Image (cartoon, rainbow, N blue to C red; front, side, top):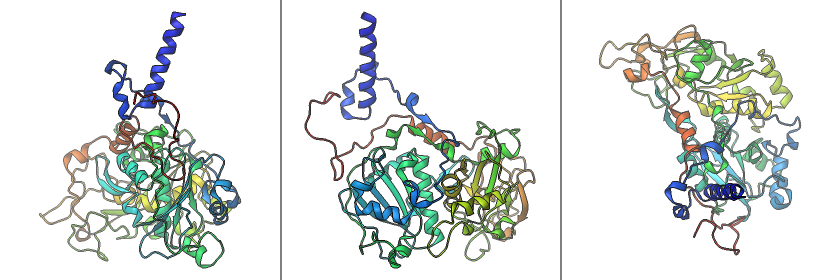
Length: 481
């Protein structure tokens, strides 16, 4: 009997602790009773578990690739027509690089909210350093991602988030699929995310649907939010880094520290860049933040070398969708494109492009339409093509890796096919330090993000905004307030 009471007391104490952590009232717990349970509660998913195959008829999807007709039904009456697993709001992020179309998905300011997001890549990606080279276009850090949730009033436990390209450009589709990838990476379940199949401008101006009925976006916020930590989910396996790929290509015989395990059923490297870049055409890869070269090519420095990751197959991203409507081709067509490149069932698809943003389109197709286990090399050719051996001869000459024995040297046939070295004058000085060249780990980003998910912190507490605030009335505060 005494043991039973003891167990009950411990259970109640731990339950209160779990509920109260991160709240101001949690301070009432004595120090000896504060046990951080978060590391034991976070579920770490495998890449296989995150694959999600679309219906053959996209109109039947309620998440993933969402058809215009489905969105029309939702916006007519979200409360009556929303997916059964969604208790909260519909939040639409309409993404546009450049001048907006002037067509906007309708919102009601109660449980449907629409935001026009200009220059989305500056919001849904960051420049982050993996220990070797800082690259643009990487998934948001946890703190930055929580700020995004707060800015758009998104409750990760209840709301459905839809990403929609405004005008029909490949850049906008890349932004939409990259934003989707970020939300999945940070633990959002597949049932609460979608990408509109087609652009807002195309369907609005052709009059094919009734949900494009307003000339200005919503300015009303639901004023709800919470930390991504509240999902207790680790999907960081979606990202594959430099060390993982080097270890894979060397058949597990590398000096890389703590790489991802080799896939049991093999891997399939998919390069979705244009054929010219895939074939190693000179000056194919303009650099991003590295612009200190003697002579620029079309206004930009270029990578140290061109080529493709060894064994990669090429399906150019432009072959995956219709450029006029920005709608993806049928699942059967997309599956045929993959199978034509000798994909074997069970292979983990490793997607890459010049950047993680542009690579997100193929990642979305392989993971969320065809339904294959897929990972994204976000650093892309911007990083891979920088890591060649090149020693400066003068103070102004270009420089890449200056140590031929660096673990990260990719201008080697064991790692790269079709190697073409760009001219000295066109290559920037990457200013690699000895530490960068001889580090044995590229896990800095993954480790930082895993730590964020497993560390208790002050998260935004949902407030009583429109469409689902905290209930009023009732008894006292169990956390001591």
